Length: 255
Ligand code: ADP
Ligand code: MG
Image (cartoon, rainbow, N blue to C red):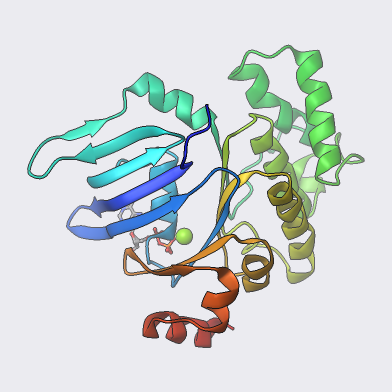
């Protein structure tokens, strides 16, 4: 059953020691939506994605992912958390693409994409290989199935990383500055793959500095600063006419 929200955060808090990194994040992403997230370095964007992907546990508030309540703390009460088994299941439903591609260096592109379906989902190798071929085709790398990461450009490696995440047939894709480490001339191909994925209906949260992508592909744009959502709205509106002074200040520095 499709939930009303793929991700919903209500007053989400996260602390590292005494540093409060998320100070009450509120946002919601519906199935099929693309939410782009911008904000200065250190504002908590990556930490929020890591909470959605269960790489970090929240300290307060409520967070739902794919219809399940991941964690919440009642006022003054104890923290409720999803059981480990459900966490493991949820992580299989979420694909994540990082700034660094993190491919297995000793495996070909095809082997990289096949690995998780075979190891985690127990899929047969023949079927997994066919699926991996189709996915590499889909990201424009049908001719690179036998190449090792070191033989591929950064942009090609990142597209393999996207194919590898898609191989798990995720309900949600998280992108954390997927093009920030790439040479400028390689950025376009990766964004193009992401755009097609969005048009195919994938639910996505994309942390990015690519305002053109946000404007063209995003259904919503969130500006985060200091661990909270400062402004959210239609990307075209927010970029053309930011309502909050901190958003204006940030955009004047990056645009
Ligand atoms: P962004 O992705 O917006 O640049 P991050 O979520 O990476 O921001 O980081 C937000 C803040 O949390 C930063 O001040 C960072 O130093 C801190 N932080 C992130 N991860 C950890 C950690 N594991 N331990 C301690 N501090 C952390
Ligand atoms: Mg980050």
